Amino acid sequence: MVVAMIKGLRLASIWSEDLTKKLLPFYRDTLGLTVGMDSPGFVIFGDPNAPALALGTHDAVHGGNADSARHMVGLEVDDCRAEAARLKAAGVEFVEDPNDVGNGLTMATFRDPEGNLVQIMQFSSAM
Image (cartoon, rainbow, N blue to C red; front, side, top):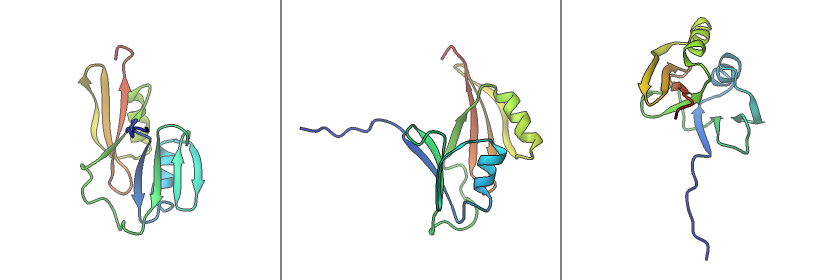
């Protein structure tokens, strides 16, 4: 007997009207994420065989995100403050500067070109 079980997060996707116009250049070039899989209308960053972030073009998505606080993608960094400074210098709009939220976690929040909120997160070794 096979028991079905959710094992954990595998992929988080952000959908766009056309990912090539704004989102792909932002995530790849500005944030510096490495494309691990690229097919027409769909891109996975990092290792496609591990939990990853994906961008895709979807015909039901039009314009920017009207409810950007509904979901957020969190990207791990080694130094949250340094990465925030680098991204600010590149023109990225931050809505929350780096701050220590407790339990060894430092986070900052910014907007991508379509208004989606993205967080950078630094976990201390004590976690």
